[in-house]
Length: 140
Ligand code: ATP
Ligand code: MG
Image 1: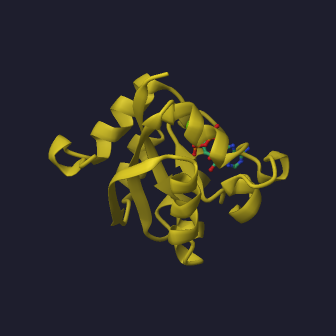
Image 2: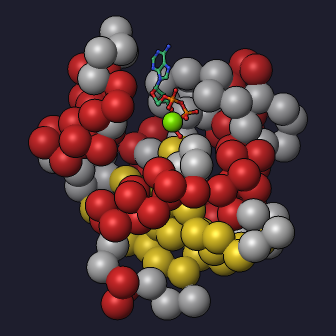
């Protein structure tokens, strides 16, 4: 196993309910280190570009509207196997299908308002981290 970095986003449904600290505790308890973090307001242009891969999906417009509906916390998580480890602690996209104790099982409101985003491959992680952070903002 290698030390990896992955991009995480705490989504507007979670910032609205003041869950940033509780979600960060799940990451830290799982051995993931938060090596960069900022609370920002996404614009439709930024959210649309970030979710460009889903442009043809029926839920794209709603997803972009949801992602700009309040602040998000973008963060870089670092640790052994961080990409897969984060996907594991997040749980399935649909909280009804997520395993107990995962972030989405504990906190998500719906398949859309599902509290967190996490990169799904090492290559996407590199691109997504560069989308939000300069190298000088990442402090292991
Ligand atoms: P993320 O990319 O946010 O980490 P994911 O990889 O589990 O989530 P994707 O298939 O990449 O899921 O979908 C991206 C996001 O789009 C989901 O997290 C969710 O917010 C939204 N989404 C996915 N499927 C649906 C759906 N059927 N209806 C509404 N929203 C959806
Ligand atoms: Mg995804």
